[in-house]
Image (tube, rainbow, N blue to C red):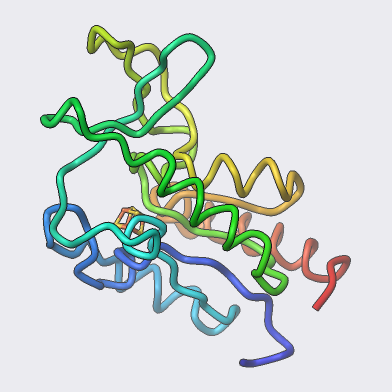
Length: 173
Ligand code: SF4
């Protein structure tokens, strides 16, 4: 660990690891190269670390009343909500301090305000955070959290790094 740099959570698939549901990678080497000098990276894949296999059936977020669950897109009887929530609770409880997070767009776990939420009938209702992102935000409301897409421009990246630096100064190490 480099003690004098902020620690950033980063989705493992952004690092090029083949952890996606389809067994493929979705790496962003330019982004990783740009942030590495500024931060200590802590890779995370909530779905794999929750014990789901790779490849695995794709899931989507579905709203039933006030409840949001992660259900199979094609296998409608599949529900991995509890598994993901269990991992997330354990992670948040045991995690040493982090100072920001860059997470993958559109994912039911990692999405940042851009994950589709569907009704039981399959109609898209809105876009929201993924389940992991939502829990992280609820636990650490001031934590800088962004998506890979948002920091794909130099301006977006610099704004995010400024937020991380400000958070780092005032947070525990
Ligand atoms: S988006 Fe998140 S849960 Fe999905 S493969 Fe990437 S790191 Fe894993």
